[in-house]
Amino acid sequence: MAHYYDIDDIIMEGELISVSFHVAANGVGLDPGSETNCVEQGSKVELPFWLAHELHQRQAVSINVPACFNQKTRKEIQADAACVDLRNRCLYFYELGCKIAPMVGDRTIGSFLLYTFTCRYKEVLSKAHSSAFVVAPKFLTLLTKEETQLYEAARSSMAAFRKWRLGGPRFEKASILGKKRKPND
Amino acid sequence: MYGKGASQLLKELSSSEPGQLKNFNTDIFEEVIKECITHHLALQSLMRKIQEEGLDIQTTRNADHFGAVIHHLSLMRNKRCLMAYVYHRAEIIQSLRWKVGPVLPEEIQEKLKYSEEEYFRNHSAALMEYISELDLDLTVDMVPPKDPYIQVRVLDDIGFALVGDQSLNLTLHSMHFLKRTDAEQYISQGLMEDLSGS
Image 1 (cartoon, rainbow over the protein chains, first blue to last red):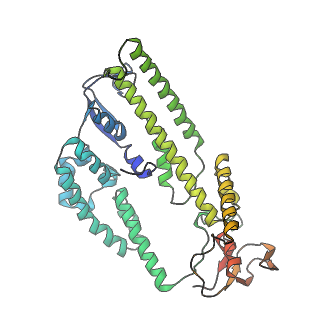
Image 2: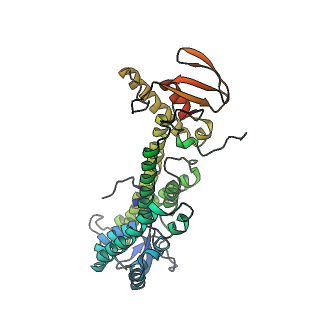
Image 3: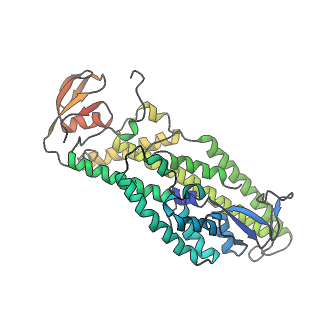
């Protein structure tokens, strides 16, 4: 269970997934296709994960597997995992996958996630340690949030190592003040 | 879609660099609170409807019940988002006291809401009280220095200031040999530069 104030967890739970309602619900404007202010039984609606998850626990909806875990994506990952643009498909690919796997009852999602991660992990680390800073932005646009954090961690550890080896001033200006230039500069 | 504004608030929080503050987003914040009030009213009217139909509110599982559940969940979600937003800003504000010092520069001050400024002042006062009780300044560097004195260069026209037990003329680009503990606050505020390089 993630921390209550965990920003990444909260944003991840905002991902839209499509569900089918087993029951009707009155007085809610969730279904854009419906004219009345209610959701009918059997209708397919896109809901954010936090709502879908709770309604699934009450057996009110069934969840359809999101597009980022379908066969097409799996084939692309098998072809060359490192080049697939996962950020565009789902920024929280791994986190959402872990949460959604037990809910849709698809046993292959777990191994698929693991395979994806191990293939891409190697690439992320080697790029973080070797590539010059100018090359990085293009490659960074393919990464999910988790991979970006790994990349940043690898970079900052390299920077810390360099600082330790070469030395530098121990005191620095508080980083929050560094952003603005003075008007007379 | 329910909870959209609240997600937007947090996305803004996560897109800013770690440790940096942005202006308090009063517009969206109040919009979310309004959304909460609408959810609350809808929830109440659905519950009333169930009761008027003579059904037991604990066990009924009809369309009204699920409508009410959705409104209830939306309220919880919005609450979590708003709390997280305020909580993370409060953490940053707390860290400012340790990094920058008891007085905030104007460009940061204008990003804070009134209640946040008050939070900063109270946190600062509590810390000062604890420091005087311990008789030990907790905000100085944790690593013991090799040399109690350091060479610094002044980066801003400070003018005459009382440093340690003597008054110094800290003009722009002048260099000084100061006690490390006296220079620390100036360096963290960006008014001086450490030249000793270790």
